[in-house]
Length: 626
Image (cartoon, rainbow, N blue to C red; front, side, top):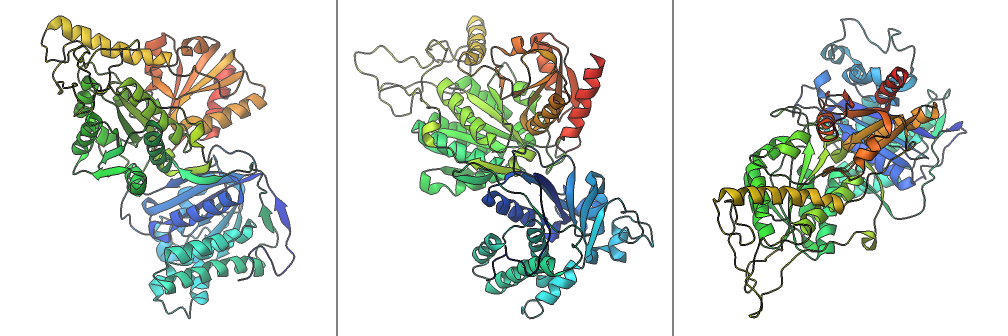
């Protein structure tokens, strides 16, 4: 095969620090696969990377319509990137609906590569354009650099001797456009060729057709004259040497559970019920049987968490994963885990609600449910991940807290983090924190009677594994007598146990790191306080605000219950606190109630993550008011 980095003519190559690209088309156009392969290629080359897959909410949205558009946005560059880009520089529009749905987010002067086959009369009508109007021809795109490419026609020509049906041939057009993008950004396509050989190893005709399509797209870029005015682009990688892999948030969470089990010496059990966008955690752990992971796909959410509670009682590192509607179903069982005081990791991959809501869209609207969504007084630790890679570290920390403090822990991610990806310098197990289970040794004849709810200085009880000699004790959801664990309906005992369980969670603050600033001065005009997936947008916006000379800083919370012990002090160092959230203002209420201050809330509930432009504009407005 000819080396894809070799061209047959001299082409001007412009070096760029970063670029944001959107692949957009119908759900059946393969945009997610195309974007994923492009992301894999730039990651292997060593570029910094951040991605955002954006799926239609409908399973079978009508082809050609706005509601059926599927997109995959990514930003890659030589320097660290923290978002997929507020606006993108290049848009691949496979049809007119893709163009119409996304044009407002393309930079003025940005590049549009339009598949002209998707701009025929039928597609234009489905996209809602007036009769006789074609944006590729009416001058409405004069502020952009437009390259009409007959993708379907060229793919059919390249595969005319493939032996495949016309429908099968047309499904290869995403590989043609992928090859064209590889040429445009001076990237090799050999990695994709190897992927296609592996993916379709039992379907050689399909493999060969897709390989021909990606090759044809690459050499179309090399041979056509339409790109003569802009040439090609190169984003030279500058990543430090090391072992990297591209990881999504869901993949990172699954790996973290497996790592925590190994580090703690416990067997891993995940009881789960499939739910968008959390299912991949179950799927990834199901592939780890050879490392001892045990997975159980239950008949519903309640069975999933109850099986995990049983596994935790039996001595396993137990976990369950879900999204908002599933967490609602798990709440009664969570109360059982709280009163039993057993370790359990609950990963909640948040999505838009209420009810079924927006299954494929991210939101941060489950914070109140994580904090308070159980009957009775049932406090538990809540932690939140801030990036796809941080899903590993936060899930691992959730497992450590659960095991060492004998409590269920809720780990919050969301659909953006779960399905987005970035490069990860694979962590050495030696660098991970130790996890020390509080497993009680067998009772000797001379030992005093075993007291299952006798506590240490952190109010943590021991873990009695069933079958251990001399450690027989009661379990269940009825209130326990202090220390003995016997059933008790005594009013004073109930109040005592309620306060003990709450104080146990509060004392976790003594064992977690102090809050730090991500960037900015220790005192100033404005602190932007964030949690979860808003991290990248806040960091980028605050960096830009500091460059403008604004007195602004950024702190991002991992530990939400309990808060780090120094958070009150940090909040008091600024004239105003801004809290951006992908909800209608939940952390704002918690901060106000806890610290008796008046932070400014900044809400976005559109099923889309924040971008840095929105947050920078809000920062600018607040600074002007101070």
